[in-house]
Length: 127
Length: 139
Image (cartoon, rainbow over all chains, first blue to last red; front, side, top):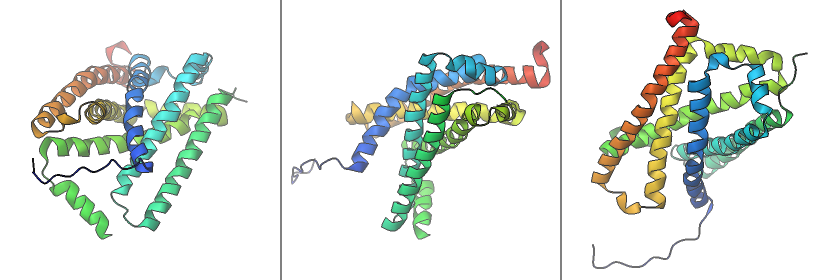
């Protein structure tokens, strides 16, 4: 390597550093969660056997609700942060980034809240 | 607008071979999965908010068009997952592997693992679709 090298101290982690780490650590967690969900629901059970009764049966067990809660929390946050990282390549102005970041935060919060309410409230009978 | 042009031109004209292709494929599959995930959270929440509409959403997913899209979605998730695990492993545990020959080898292994998972999975999903939507195999 070059002879005139110099030592640079590692900068303090900022939001982008933490978001970079979050993507990788959540990825490791999401592999069993998402692959398991996909193989079970899309391949083994199949969409033709899924209906309201199936969801009710599945959510009758607390374990599956916790599983789905983990999916909702980690997969969607990972997805929206990924969208943010992609858009950061296209939006360069501070103002544009600010609007995009807050817009995506609001989007993430509302969709996660809707999912969480449904997950806690459970399947309601058709009136 | 010129920023978008610069980024898009860079995406297309950069010639990074395997590493470049897996970067692009990782982004496209990630965006596709995120789009579906948003729709999926909202349709599943129908079981609480509009239980009488949930069956309509499921009927859409059972259609042939969505059946084909589902096969594509499973590819997106499998590739994004396997490639993401590769990126996480390189970044967190073995950054010395970020070299051109190792990239060439590992991206090919990634695609191989993805296909080995995706082909049997899509065969079963297509079987289910032909069984239920077209009455094949005695359906």
